[in-house]
Image 1 (cartoon, rainbow, N blue to C red):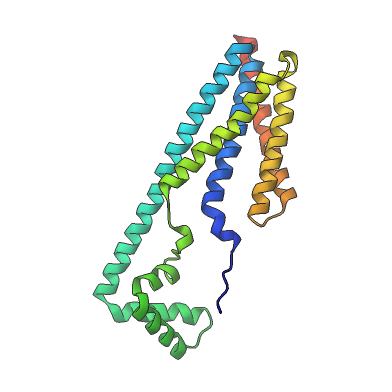
Image 2: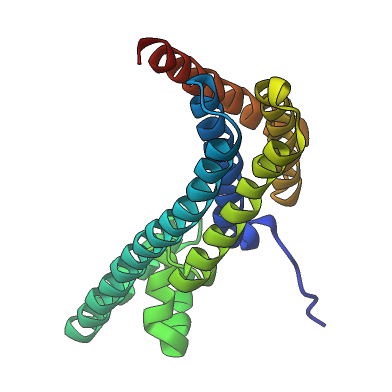
Length: 229
């Protein structure tokens, strides 16, 4: 009796979009708020800028992810169409090519040919897509889902530093934004690594390091322009 197995690689598609969206939401909004606060903006201006950043960022993430994943889907479709034409044009060559792939993986030539014959009799294009082109069901692109996931997770991530702006004292805004954003990023990095089967500690350290670096640069630029203007 066949049992169902679940692998971490099955989560790559949605996990990538979700983590990227939430990470960008937290980091870009926190950095934006820090930058304008360092330049001298306060109160209402900071909040409006943060909200504008949330909306613009969510829409940009959705559009960018949709275009990116759609391009990936177009490439996969084009490869499959081309492979289908090659199968129609020279079935024997494609059969030998598939057998050669199995030989390179350790099968003896006779058995590799039998495997190629069986798989091509069942689903010739599917066999070549999987073993020659490296296209699997996991990699099938879903542009709308990726766009929706990115936009939603960006908005959720961006809302976190915005909440801090509304709750933190004005004289401690920068410290509150940096501290809480790094905590949010560490939690996100740890969760993403755990879901993906990697080390939570490494995931947390990686995302907090680059988050701190980005916020420091943005704060420095804001301070510079605030002094000059």
